[in-house]
Image (cartoon, rainbow, N blue to C red; front, side):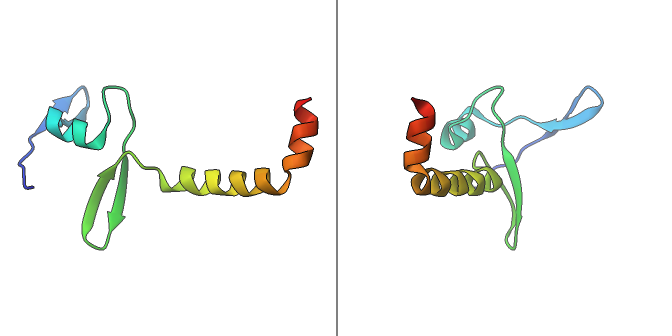
Length: 75
């Protein structure tokens, strides 16, 4: 899909208005955050935060390893 977007002034900043179809494909709406990733192919706009995903993976490993301790703490 190729689409031309226009840069527009938003206060003292510059912004891009994303069409509804793009927002639906990204599954985001007003107030959500998007990540801009630099890749070898260019720039990628995504709702996925790789740093947060990495932190969640680490937390899940700890929770699996310390399951009994966390259960006792929850009691």
